[in-house]
Structure formats: C-alpha cells, structure tokens
Length: 305
Ligand SMILES: NC(=O)C1=CN([C@@H]2O[C@H](COP(=O)(O)OP(=O)(O)OC[C@H]3O[C@@H](n4cnc5c(N)ncnc54)[C@H](OP(=O)(O)O)[C@@H]3O)[C@@H](O)[C@H]2O)C=CC1
Ligand SMILES: O=C[C@H](O)[C@@H](O)[C@@H](O)[C@H](O)C(=O)O
Image (tube, rainbow, N blue to C red):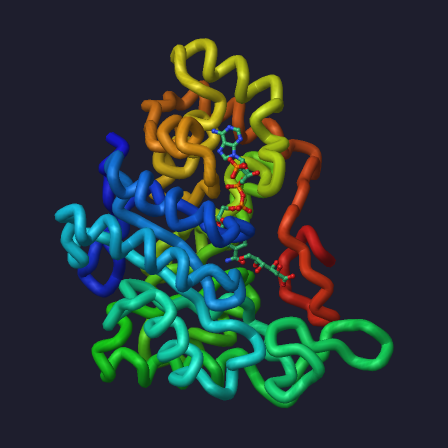
C-alpha cells in the first residue's frame, strides 16, 4: 500500500507518499533523499526557496547511480514569490540546482508576488519590516506564464499551492490548463474540506503538507491518533499519513531521520470509524494552521478571516 499512486489530470501518476524537505539542511537532506529512495519512496518535494535543491539533487543522483530510473521518481519543486515575473528563469535555476532536465510538477508556492528587486532575494521587506509584496502582480498572470512552461518540456505538470477556493475560482476563470495539484496544509486540525471538495469537483489533486503538524510533529501526541495507532498496531505517524491516502490525497512528511523516514513509509488501512474519530478532532472550530506567513494579503481561507 505504501506504493499507492493517484492519477493526475495530465494522465501522469503521483505517488501517495512523498518525502518533504522544507528545513532539511545541506549535509542531511542528501542522505535523507538517497535513503528514502533506497527504501521505496518515489516522490520528493522541494522548492527553490528551501535553498537545498542542490543537495536534493545530489541525493537524487546517488539514487540514479544506484539504478533507480529518473522516470520512476516524481520530483516537485516550486516557483518562489520573488520570481512571479520571472517564471522561466526560476524554473531554469531549479533545474540546474537539482541537476535535472525536467520537473514532474512545478507549483506556484504562494499566490502572492514579492518585489523582485527588493532588499533580499527571497524575503524582501519594506522599511517597516513587513513583507515587500508586489501588489502589481496578479497570481493568475503568474499562472498563465507557468502554462507556457508546459511547451518547453521542462515541466510535466503545473499546479498551485496554498490556494483557497476563492483563489482557485479566480484562477479557473482565466486559466487554459486546470492545475494538476493544489498543495495545501492538511491534517485533522486543518481538514480544509471546502478546498478538497472544490478540487475534487474540478479534477485537481490535493497534496497534503505538514501532516504531522510541521516542526516538532505536535500532532503525533493527539490522544485519538495514539488510540487508532494502538488499535492497528502501527505508529501514530502512519495514522496521520494514512488519513490522507484514504481520502485520495498524496501526503508529504519531512524527516531527515532514517528510522522516521522508514516509519513514515507505511500506509494503514483506516476504517470509517477511524476516519470519523479523526474528523472529530476539529469539531467545534478547533482548528490550527501551522503555515501562516505574514503576507499582508487575504488568502481567502475561512479560518484566517
Ligand atoms: N507548499 C508549502 O507552502 C509547504 C510545503 N511543505 C512541504 O511539506 C513537507 C512536510 O511538511 P513539514 O511542515 O515539513 O512538516 P511535517 O508535518 O512533515 O513534520 C516535520 C517534523 O516532524 C518530524 N518527524 C517526521 N517524521 C516523524 C516521525 N515518524 N516521528 C516523530 N517525528 C517525526 C520531523 O523531524 P526530523 O526531520 O528531525 O526527523 C520534523 O520536525 C515539507 O517538508 C515540504 O516539503 C510544507 C510546508 C509548506
Ligand atoms: O513550503 C514551506 C513554506 O511555504 C515556507 O516556504 C514558507 O512558510 C516560508 O517560510 C515563508 O515564511 O513564507
């Protein structure tokens, strides 16, 4: 079951379990990627802004040298906000760093552009210290530039991340190509059923990020997760990851620790009772969003209103 794949609207398949690499440092991430691929993972998620694409590329190369085929590995990377007006350039930078000639999935990391000529290449700020957002750039214009990448052969699919229903509606009004994926924060404390239902209806696959609650994996200590793990005789992490797979979503767990990378490559067959219990966690508006950068922009998510 760990090798479950889901179809994308491009005809390609995305492996259900992927290795996340946000905050995975150089010196650690090469080994994490190489190890994950050696034990069966076939889906690696990175981003230009993570600053580790070169090291992710080293891990990939080691796996390819060991006999794993490029075409069997699904690699995602992301356009960063300071590059919304330089889409092709940002893709080429990522390809070079990763040492790849194509990306399986290229995502717009956030639907917010930042000043391309600001006081920092990734996180420019204005004199008051807040994010230097480029309000002149509309996210749909950025997406339309991403559509052009498909003709270059350098990306097999394009998609978005951190898109609410409101933003998806804006995008679909003008897009020629329906995004293949919307990568969003998703876990029992942030189910985002509105986004999932909308995406399902439009043929957009959901990839869940921060499934363990992000840094320090706080959701592993939720009592209901421990109870379901005991019931099935598996790790709590497997419960939090399988919650997505059962829903037809792919899921990214980040780890640089071999024992955890291995533990996270296990899908448990959750039943209706388990899924209902996990759904109860957020009942009564008990929600927690971990990824909440100070954008100064309304992203349209109901829990942020
Ligand atoms: N599109 C976007 O904006 C975003 C995308 N992402 C993507 O999703 C990935 C996953 O999300 P992320 O926020 O990193 O958080 P996760 O929910 O994957 O949690 C990562 C944390 O959990 C720890 N951990 C992992 N597995 C276990 C385990 N089995 N037992 C105990 N602890 C564990 C890790 O520690 P350690 O590494 O030390 O083992 C790390 O501290 C990212 O890495 C990134 O690729 C994430 C955020 C935003
Ligand atoms: O993918 C991971 C996250 O989106 C991360 O890149 C952002 O949250 C970033 O740290 C920010 O502050 O905008």
